Image (tube, rainbow, N blue to C red; front, side, top):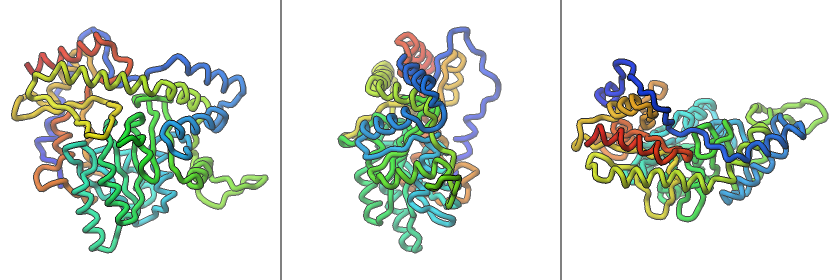
Length: 399
């Protein structure tokens, strides 16, 4: 199923946007604690600037403790973490992996790295994440075709947890392992459990715009300590235990550097403050725009606690003629960065031959969210005055 032509054509910018002279407000810029240099200087003093080292070891332990996982492996990216998780599950050429459609492409690219085939699952309205109803239909068809998936990748979008109980129950029924893509949801919880800690593997990203940043990097977590030990082995070029360079299987250069791990450690110390700040940004948007009937926001379901990594706004076409594209251009003219919602993967040219299971027979929920959604500036270092500028710019267009 493809997105309606009018949805994608509405995003084409006809000309550059004139920009005001005011300082730019970014979508989600890095927010340093001031303590990063302590750990960086320790790395330099000890000459541990290469991959591995004390900061890496401690960052792994500290993040495992924070999430309640038994073990963690610090890696070069969240994408690398997904790749290794699939590898550890045993995904190979011709296998099938179910994956959320409404997500960044990094959730699905590692499926292709291993020669497997992605099958995309639509979102549902209450969380914007993977639809249990669509997942059930996908499993029913896979059972009939005698080709069950070897893994399911569930994404916790923009910080909001998916309905993990329902999704895990379906996957457990078929004994299919779950990779919980929590790249955007560190600090979020679902029924008291840390986001990323519910599936067989959890992954996090520390890219520059994430809720904590090491400028890059990622983490793979699991309660299977043997699997994490294997991940560390594979991510270090799979060097066998020998007095020389001996290799018996394919490895990867995926380890996080000791310097970046030091940045990550300082950032993790501030995670609760970062979550509180992003939630405060969301709450002010919600309060200040509550009188606009065209505006709604990503829900937070009962029992979950979102880090509100990005505040995402929906525009109801029945209440306004302003499209996300027009609003984005208006914000840009006020020197404010905004971003469209992820373009669903089942609509991407790269995956045009992949199967897709919609939530319902009408327009897929993921396509609706892409068509009518816009991500607003949400950084934890955003000032009150900066947010006021964003709110005024939105109201200028919608009132």
